Amino acid sequence: MSASKINFKTIFRATIRNAVLLVNIFFVLLYVLGVLSTIVSPQSLLYISYFGLFFPFIVAVNLFFIVFWMIKRRRYWLISLCLIVCTFYHANNVFTIPFGRLSKKSYNTEVKLLSYNISSLSEVKKFDDFIDFIDSVSPDIVCFQEFGFYQNDHNKNRLKNAMKKRFPFSHIWYKNQTKNYSWGVATFSKYPIIKKKKIDYESLYNISIYSDVVINSDTIRLINNHLESNKFTLSDIKQYRSLDDNLSSDNIKNISALLSRKMSKAYKIRASQAIIVRKEIDRSPYKTVVCGDFNDVVESYVYHKIKGNLRDVFTATSWGYRYSFRKNYMFVGIDHILIDKNLVPISLHIEPKTFSDHYPLIGIWGIKTDKTTGERGLSRKFCLYLPLESYWYIF
Image 1 (cartoon, rainbow, N blue to C red):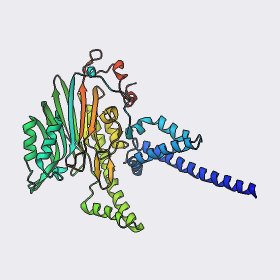
Image 2: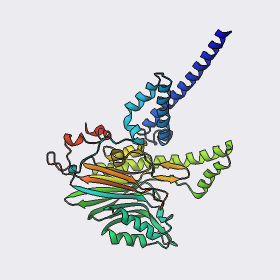
Image 3: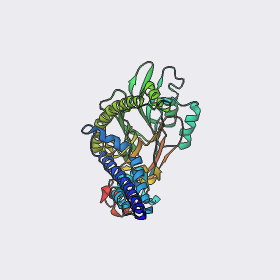
Image 4: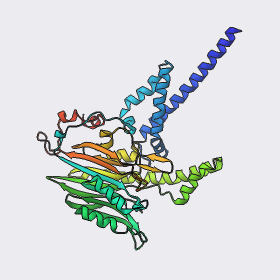
C-alpha cells in the first residue's frame, strides 16, 4: 500500500514536471519566432511580426523558467539560458544592460536631440507649460512627429512661432494640410540646415524627411520619421475598452479580428517604408542620425531594417525596459534614436511627460574626428569601450 502511494506521488510529480517542461519548450519556440520576426518581412510572412510585439513577455517567461529550474535543481534551466546567451543581442534590446561608458575624451562636440511625437498638442492643457519643458531640456535639435493643428485649436501657429524664435533653422513638411487641419513632421535646429528633402513612400498620413545639418566642421544627415500607424479610431478604442466589462468569447473574437485587420495592414506598409528609409541611409554621404516614431518595437523587422549598422542610443547607454508609448493599457517602446557607428552614444532619457500619448526621447551623442582612420573612421582601441551591441557590427 505504501509503495503504491509512493509510486502515485512519483508519477504525479513527474507528470507535473513534464508538463512544465513542455510549457518551457513552448516559450523557447516563441522566443525563436520573436527573433525571426526581426529578419522576416511582414510582407512575406505576416503573423510572425506579432511574436516580436510580445517579445518582452516571452523573454520574461524564459527568465522565469531559468530561475524555476535552478530552484528545482534540474538542468532544464540550460535550455532557456543557452538560448538567451546565444541571442543575447535580442534579449538585451528588450531589457537593456549597457556594458560600458565612454569618457569625455572620446568626442569633441556634444549634441542634444529631442525627439517627440506631440500628437498635435491634443493633450497639452497649458501651452506655456509645454514651451517651458522645451526650454528646460535645452536641446540643440528638436524633431517633432504629428506636428500640426486643428482649425479651432488656439495653439494653431503658436508652437511654430515659438520654436522658430528659439531655433533659427527649421524643416517643416505637412503630409496633409487644409484650411481646417494640418499634419506632418518638423525639425528645428540651432545648427544650419543646408539641405532639406522629403522621403517619398506610400502613406496617406505618415511621412519621413531628412535635413543635412552642419555641426561645426561636420555634416550630419538627420532623418525624422513618423512611420505608418495602426490608425485605430475612437470607435475602435471604445470597442477595445469594452473588454473591461465584457469578456464574452464573441466580444473577444470581434475585437481580435478588428485589431488583426488594422495591424496587419500597417505592418506591411511599415515594412515597405522601412526599406525606402534604409536605402536613403545607405545613400547618405554623411554620418546619419535617425529618429522618430517608428510605430514598431525593437524586436521587429522595421526597426532592424532601418537600424542596420547604426547604434541605438538607448541600448548603448541606458538600463531596463524601454517604453515611450502609454495608452490603452499598452506600454511599448516605438520611438527610437539611432546614430551612425562613427558617432558616440552618450545618454538617452525617456522623460515621463504627459503632453502626448508618447513620451519624449532626449538623446545625447558626440562627434569625434578620428585622426588615424579619417573623418568617418573608428579605431579598434575606441571600440573596446563600446557596449556589447556595438561589437556585433565592428568585429
